[in-house]
Image (cartoon, rainbow, N blue to C red; front, side, top):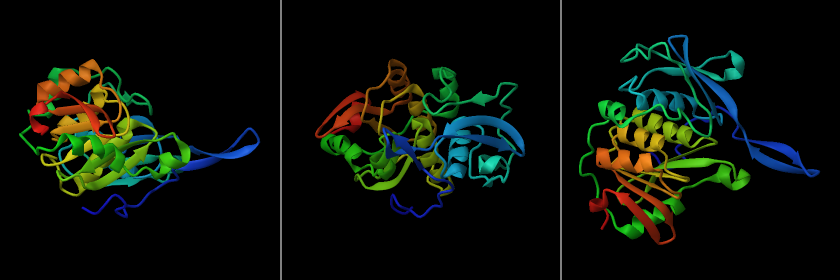
Length: 258
């Protein structure tokens, strides 16, 4: 895999210019994306256009609906806000279809038991110094956030702290899906020797996605929720929050932190 600016095509604009108090201001773009499988609509998510194929594949992988790379392409209808993924799916998603937003994802739909079906207990993975763990958010390159202040980011890091891949989106779960989708295409899953880092709070859904992707360490700038801590502990994940400067709080899996 190449570095954070890996040259993967960006299929949309990430920022737009609006008027604010008589001045021009740059804001994050938010548009709907419909994910289809073999032409059948499965979900709609509000996202920042760009790396949409990665987002679709990462989402489907995190839901346990696919287990490897699939052909995925933008449709020309609805102003290219549709991605069609080749099936079949590993299981029938049932009559329920997903609707996600840029803020919460599939809120409240998960349980520890359901995640355990798709996410085995994590292996030992890497061990790293507390100072390195605390420094990872500072290594997240976030140009769109710098211009708008309205983006979340997820980064994939090596055990030595090298940024391998960074994606930005208005939705924190979308940014995670884009990283996991790219890792899926690169043949890097499961992420047993990698670290995931997010720019915001640590929700249940982010821990779920990291666990299904096989990442043994997840660190964030913000606070975790109680269910996120419970799930991380249940799957043997190192979960760390409030990573700023040289400080970080470790909520589970402290044995990996030196």
